[in-house]
Image (cartoon, rainbow, N blue to C red; front, top):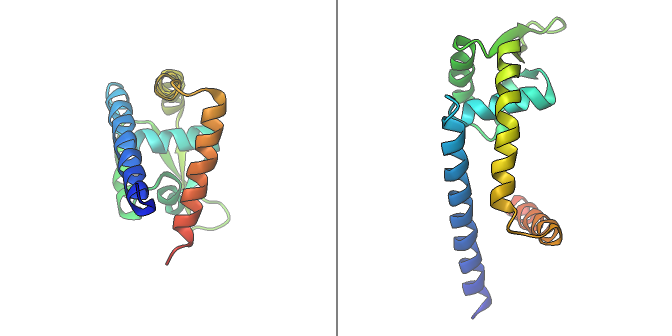
Length: 145
């Protein structure tokens, strides 16, 4: 197989694997009454603490225009609150509420377990190799113009 054909095949396999994993995980997340984006925001706040609204999109790979909508929905559900920055009034933080913390603490262990079920077909060594190879591809793609 030519090098370019092999690259194309790898791209297709990688894309299909990502879609299969993502579809499976999204169904799991939806079973808790959240959409994947809402889960991503709650998970970010739970693990990283309060975040400026303007930076959330970049951290969970979401367009900034969608953040307001997602934050509004999570706020209506009582899972997060907006908090003004004391030092800079132009900045507003998203803060996970006690209810949001309780929900993510309930959901996250089974989320992590589902991921381990899927990725668990690989040995520890294979996971480490896959991480290194995918990082290499990702960094290369970022460097292209």
